[in-house]
Amino acid sequence: MRRLAVIFLLLVAVALVAAFAGILWSGRRRLAGPTVLVWRVDRPVLEQAPEPLLWGSASADSMTVLYPAFRAARADRNVKGIAVYIESAELGLAKAQELRRQLAALHQAGKFVECYLDSVGEGTNGTLDYYLATACDHIQMSPTGDVNLIGLYAEGTFFKGSLEKLKVDPLYRHVGAFKSYGETYTESHWTPAAAEAINAVLDRSYEQLVAAVATSRRLAAGAVRELIDGAPYTATEAVEKRLIDRLGYPDEFRARLTRLAGGRPRWRRLQDYGEAAARPSGRRLAVIVAQGEIVHGRGGSTPWSDAVELGSDEMARRLRQAARDESLAAVVLRVDSPGGSALASDLILREVKLLARRKPVVVSMSDLAASGGYYITAGARKIVAEPATLTGSIGVVGGKFITRRLQEEVLGITHEPLKRGRNADLYSTLTSYTAEQDARVQARMRRVYDVFIGHVAEGRRLPRAAVEAVAGGRVWTGADAQRLGLVDEIGGLDRAIELALEAAHLPKGEPVRLEFYPESRSLFDFLHERREPLLPASLVRLARSLEPPRAELLELPPDLARLARPF
Image (cartoon, rainbow, N blue to C red):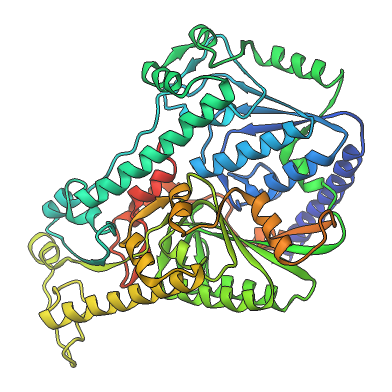
């Protein structure tokens, strides 16, 4: 035991020395001469991602690191430009719109913005990779690469046939014709309502993608559509069709960057630069991240995967702290959530409303702010969304799986239920609802739905009838949500922060210190957590998709949530 304690203390000492040396070194490098930032897009981009332990790299990039880096680089005279190496853009379309805007802001600040790709998708859909690359001044690609600019693709997954074979009977109820969570289990195809909503989202997303590519590449929208329909292309064909500016290998790309920087620049990872960037003094503004499925209780990262849950207890505590902190001028609530528990969503909304009584609260929506993810925004002063954000989905769903036939006829398990109380078996997976229970379940869902409508009507200052007309569980893009009054403005974090500062009546140009919450975990947090997930998130999501929703659930079905990244 003593030996383990000594080893533990040695590890802590080594980590602290390494961290201290890293801080000194990064600060020294930041004060040096001409710099080129390097951003490798080769992993998922989350709002807030796990960080490395003592060695290795994080499994995902984080907007809480990338955004401050972009913001600081604009004003840093030593930064001459940025090199963006795109290998795999694992993010949603709305987050890509945010990052394209940040690259454009660097260009407007007089920095060069150059992109390199070995291939635009290697045997896979490279549409999002190319979409992100079009924010650059020039796009260079390997002579042997391909351009898989083939458009948007989304497919539904239905388990009705599998459940029938397993003799499992799904029992679902919902409020809102478009609230299609249960259809994953009860149908073999999209219902007309679900197909209508999904096709509308694909249409709007496709329009946005085509328009952005057309503007960036100085092409007509019709020409871009034809190019997408004719893809994929070889590297030479892509240059001829003006999709790629030049061909070359990584060494040739680096030589070009050196010339653009004026010779022999210092190369800095964008993430390292952001962590070392000086923070101005002055009034503080908090950016509070609300990421993941909303659950009642603690939440956090699950021990068997890299999936993240937004716990009502932790989020409520964070919002209360912000309300008590007199030095905070305003709060931006950054939401990336498909929803979840109705109870948890309501508890979080209560704290958002209490916070808004003390200081301005502005919402910035990322890829998803739908169902419960939209519910928690209803108390904010303003809501800003990306054009492709999936939001709305004002509706309720709930139900259970009846597994009696599976257990008795397939597994040979028998049961002899005993109960006291007419509805004691309401949540049992052995029995269906009685007529009385069914009526009670639907009445409870209707009550949650009515409360949801009421919060939105109050928060958005809309007549109740106007909210009901756009509710019904339907998902909207951010652009459509603005038109319908569910969102105030189209934009990203920059605009949300600007609105929050205006609401706080801070003089224009006054330095503001941005702080992101939750804060990075400490070394001791790392030491007691397993850093490598036991299962990949994709497998965990698949397993969870087979679980029945809890009663009064405000959540997008997995297939609709995946529409945030229809590639």
